[in-house]
Amino acid sequence: MASYLLSLLFLSLTLTLVIAEKPVHFHFYQHKTFSAPNPSDVRVAKGPIPLPVGPFSFGDIIVLDDPLTSGPEATSPLLGRAQGLDSVMNSLTVTWVFNIVLTCGEYNGSTIAIMGRDDILLRVRELSVVGGSGAFRMARGYVLVKTYSVDNITGDSELELDVYVYPAKL
Ligand SMILES: *[C@@H]1O[C@H](CO)[C@@H](O)[C@H](O)[C@H]1NC(C)=O
Ligand SMILES: *[C@@H]1O[C@H](CO)[C@@H](O)[C@H](O)[C@H]1NC(C)=O
Image 1: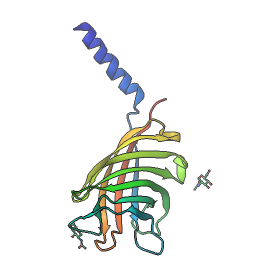
Image 2: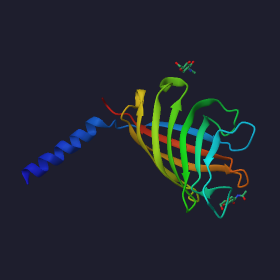
Image 3: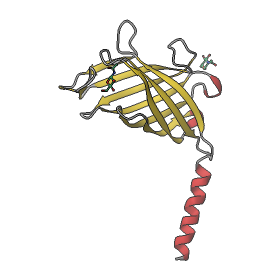
Image 4: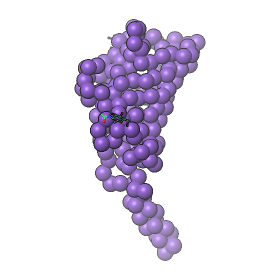
């Protein structure tokens, strides 16, 4: 019993030491553009089963290099980019694997590694911060995603991201 309590104490001490208490919060608008002339999202594989809404199919693989801005307009100040992959599931969900690359400010050059399940019909979806580099080496956290606007014909969309990152205390 005593050793059980001791290990619990040790575990909670370790967790408090490793994870900072306060997250760094970023608020971004992510511009996903499929349409010409300057797409930031490119479908590199087309799946065989069309989804009931939108231009996508189960099995689509999309490579993205999207601008992240401070405001909803495409001309708002650029804060970073979202670079990675989307894979489209059979149920209007997308599995995301991407890095946020910060390109200005205090964290310029640092990256945040994100993975998660985006159930696009939900108002707010949650993705996981699984790591990072630079200021965010071994970081943890989460991302709340909302759809700001979407064009069901082209697939162009704008997402609102709230990123909460707990830097590791190394
Ligand atoms: C961010 O870092 C890059 C590479 O060091 C540098 O070229 C760029 O000017 C920096 N941007 C800002 C806004 O500080
Ligand atoms: C796009 O599709 C979504 C999901 O079915 C729907 O909620 C939304 O109203 C559609 N938007 C437009 C502009 O048709």
